Image (tube, rainbow, N blue to C red; front, side, top):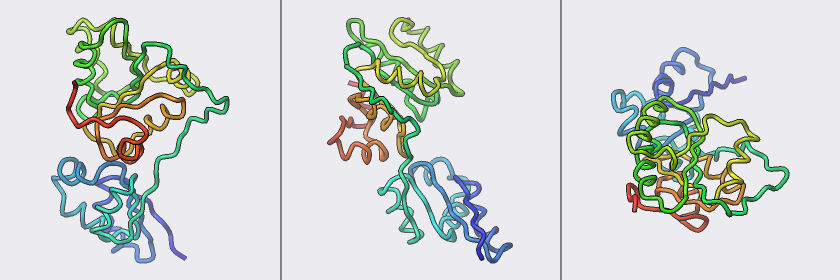
Length: 228
């Protein structure tokens, strides 16, 4: 019988040929969590040959979208995709009434990937009593807090911290709009969460959001970096 080993991301994927050389009867799955181009041109550029070789020798490559499956499939024909499953259930069928002037943003607090700097610009342009509520924690929290303070946006951008499931459900149902400002996004689980609670979606046109929203049929896709 075969043992199956699942390896995630770049460094471990790069080790697949070595693993298969040392353990002859093992099957290895390479599970990739982000966009193909981001891995190749940014994250794993330093050891790109080893990374791509790992993809090539994997017994199966699993990505998050059909679009990325095609790209990995050019290297390894044994490729598939599995969408991220919803972890919020909404058993009570809570749907936002869209009556509050609240924009919801849920994310790890990482400025570059998640486009938190864009939120500052958006916050400065918000009219009337519209506000952005941010749920999440991350390595750039202090930087974000400083950016909010420097731009006098304490009343416009509200940090909610990390929320548990019930708290997150309440946040979604209290909002009238969900936005995603990511510079790249392998999938975008928070978009599907927001949709579960009836929120309209506006997102930059990244691979994951594009596939979730079916090219804009189920939400508004904006060209990347277009704040206006």
